[in-house]
Length: 369
Ligand code: NAI
Ligand code: MG
Image (cartoon, rainbow, N blue to C red):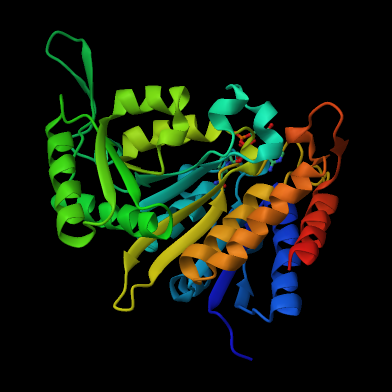
């Protein structure tokens, strides 16, 4: 049987395990109804790996991840492992995956489903139909630049130091990811920095412009200072399509954009690395939420963020954009039919479990295809 490629599934801990079960239903559906199959491996990460092997990720699992076309991760962490030293905590498994796969571009979509328009804190007209993508540089900038630290000055007072550093290559590679994605969407990119007050921002603007002019001249490019971008995101978010920005501004702007559309349980993400000779990028897909220990094991978690993360994997790693859109449409239809997990519950809607939400999405897929 020909497969579309290698997929590594890492459910992790807590609700990661429950929501991944629902992704499996969608994977089974693709196989049975569309003849689309993947070479799937499943392994432990985070606390579940610590319990089994004494470390948050094994070398063997890391090897499979490096060979995979895409990694799909649930969530890691929980109170059971909170008192371990930092080097062996569940989160270290995630950090090693991101580092060893070289995932420098973090994709955070903010999509507003029509059925959830009323759940936004913004006016329905402002968010209805919203579909934007924030591309955040993930491995450079002020979180990693040196010098850094806290020092004591001769007068006894202290000084905290962090340094924003970007090289041309770091800017160019994330710009390429953003333009590349724009060509699969609406050919429009807004680049955001503070070139008015930061030299790293001046370089950012120059290099993004260079990649645009030399490699993606057909994409519409504009530049916007990050503070203005934050204002525009809450004033009129639909003016944007793809936003590309650095690590720090991206951290803030992506959280801000995400909350335009509602619950953590709805938010997918992707992290991409360098392209190989065939244009294939290392990639990891995961929901934005964590392991939610407060509701873990109770069949209460919303599986939609993880199902939408899988849809992103189809679109960006397996060239199955049509199937990705089908899954997104199925989610939209289930929400329009009034089904809600607890986190997105609204008056007059029907509260359902993790399992029923997953089953309903598969049934909606059946009706669409
Ligand atoms: P969290 O995202 O796990 O939960 C925050 C709140 O949102 C909780 O009340 C939870 O019940 C709710 N929630 C989250 N996802 C949900 C879903 N799919 N459906 C319904 N409700 C949902 O963040 P928290 O509580 O700060 O962290 C819990 C654990 O997760 C910690 O150990 C933390 O380190 C870890 N974590 C892991 C992440 C990852 O694996 N990427 C990301 C964030 C936190
Ligand atoms: Mg953040």
